[in-house]
Length: 106
Image 1 (cartoon, rainbow, N blue to C red):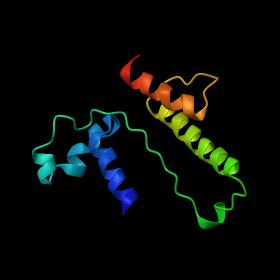
Image 2 (image 1 turned 30 degrees about the vertical axis):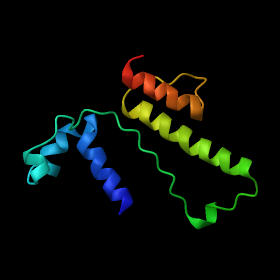
Image 3 (image 1 turned 180 degrees about the horizontal axis):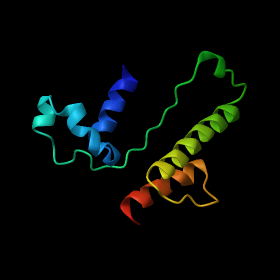
Image 4 (image 1 turned 135 degrees about the horizontal axis):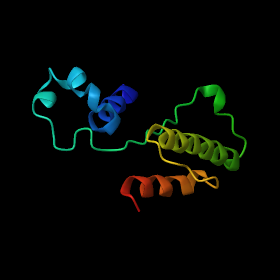
């Protein structure tokens, strides 16, 4: 349910989903009276879903490294999806700052 809800929000607000807006929302009230912000955002989806077998970390450091790997892969996917050039020295946390600068043109 949560993933479906987040996917629906992405389809409503993501600039890349503009061509699908009428098909997805046209018959609904929100499609007939859309907000001014529909399809105006670059959306960074963060998926931290894991199966139980992957939750066998022995140290906090291992958990942090796993978190950084997931975050890093999502930042790279964002860069690819929106045609941003990721710097070679990009890491997970610097990546979030980089995403913000891409989107805001800073």
